[in-house]
Image 1 (cartoon, one colour):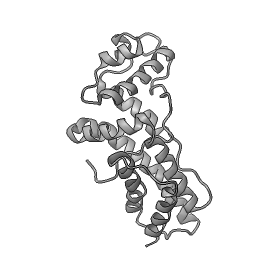
Image 2 (cartoon, helix red, strand yellow):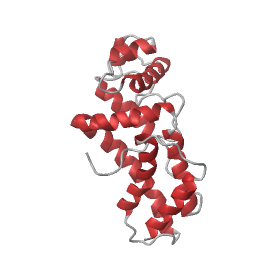
Image 3 (cartoon, one colour):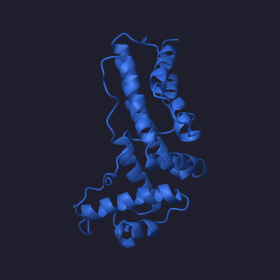
Length: 217
């Protein structure tokens, strides 16, 4: 695994997951039309089952049963558990919009941290993300297929926050972007997803100030 921070969760995490990358209702080549109501039910069941059982114990049979669908309905959409996981998790994590442009670096950082905290404080991301990261350490196939896509795309979006600050003259042009991205995500993820420690009301404000000082050091 890369030393880069773990993939950032979608923020805020949706109460119901979006459909997969397959367009619901379109016909696969030589196959039946995929009904979006079934696709959405399967996607929702997948995330619930993933949060409950974890990736290693996740079975397509359990997902199908939870969704009230047949296992064949899953195989018409995804070839395997890995394909399903990559498709659905990537759709949620990568399709999220880029960091909010508030007009100032401090505002952007605080908005970013608030977004991440909101996601990590929700039930499904709080259980799913650490599990997938741990499983990625045991499964190079999962790590390569999922984490590179999610992590690299999310980090590219977060880089926009730094580039805007450079353009406004709030950060030097030679700011260490890789280190800044690590710092931007690492402390909050560690606190909420690893050691599960609640934050005080002013925690994100204080963390923002520390990050700004570090970026400019």
